[in-house]
Every structure is written in C-alpha cells, then in structure tokens.
Amino acid sequence: MTCNAPIAFGTLVEYWLGELDEATELRLDEHLLGCGACSAALAEIVALAGGIRTAFERGAVRAFLSDAFVRRLVAAGVRLREYRVPLNGSVDCTVTPEDDLVVSRLEAPLAGVTRLDAAVRQAQDAPEQVFHDIPFDAGRGEVVVAPSIAHLRTLPSYQHRVRLIRVEPGAEQVIGEYVFNHTAWTPAARG
Image 1 (spheres, one colour):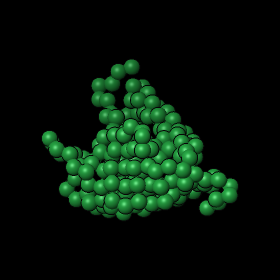
Image 2 (cartoon, helix red, strand yellow; image 1 turned 45 degrees about the vertical axis):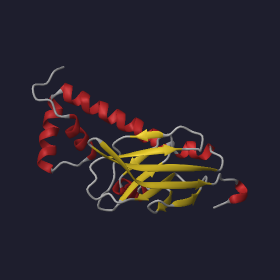
Image 3 (cartoon, helix red, strand yellow; image 1 turned 180 degrees about the vertical axis):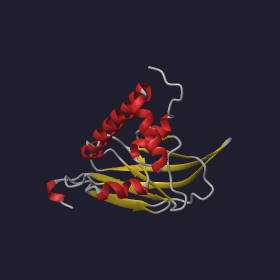
Image 4 (cartoon, helix red, strand yellow; image 1 turned 90 degrees about the vertical axis):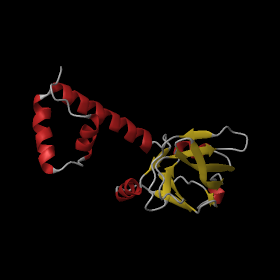
C-alpha cells in the first residue's frame, strides 16, 4: 500500500482527537475511505492511543499534563487528588485507595521560557532523573505533573524533589525547586 498524498502523522492525530474543522475532517474522511496506507496509519494511532489510555488508567505512567487534559479527566469521572506547590516550596502529600490520579501543580515564573526540563530525585540517595522539553503553561505559570499512581502506592514515607530548569542555547537556569513530603497511606491514616 502506497499513497501519493499521505496524511501527516500530526494531522491524523488531530483527526482522531476531533480537533479539525468540519471541512478538513470531511476531506480526510473521503481520503481515508479510499486509501489503505493512510487508513493503516490511522489504525496504528488508534491502537497507540488505546495502549496509552490503558497504561494511564492503570496508573503505570508518569506524565506532564496540560490543565485542559486534567479538566477532561475530571469531567470523565476520574477521582483526582491535587496539590499546588508554590515556587521553591513544599507540600505534605499522600495517595489513598480512592484516588484515581494524583496531580501536582508546580508554580513557576515561565514568561519567556521556550524550553523547560524537570530534574526529579525520588529519594536522598537516588540518582536524579531528567525529563527533557516538558510541557508547561506560561500563561498560568505552572507545570502540571502526574506521577505513576501505581508506583506511588508502593512507596514508604519519603521526600521527593523536583527542579524546573529553563534551557536556553548554551545555558541552563534552575527556576524553581519543589519538595514533596510523601506519607505512605495506611488504613489507620485515612484521608
């Protein structure tokens, strides 16, 4: 199967998410009905989305999210535990069996930032893990992160640290540091 005018991957994703205008969607509908190659590419996106959804629902994925995505999850009935952490601040946190997702909103001065990395240290003696080019909302001045809730449930009480790093050509600058004082959930410590 080959196609003389293949639909770009990003456009297929937008099509799958219903983000295209009606005229473009109709044009793609016609193309997909007659093009095996593009239909196969769309089927791969659908399968990938299903796998990601399953992993996310099982709490197996750590992700940096948008506020809009979090709002869609809540509207879909996801039970959310949420923490807001001020710039260079800390928060006492936990996870309970009733929580489907834990979200932290890291407040940061993001005006003018074009690329942001996050350095995460899950324990004092653990190596730092760096996530490159993470999404952020400069207008809201926040980074939204959802740890793997399945992993979070297995952890003892500990201290978790996150640094947000502004990345510019030839330079990096820490713009915020955040501490999470995690308390392991036990039936005696409901809440």
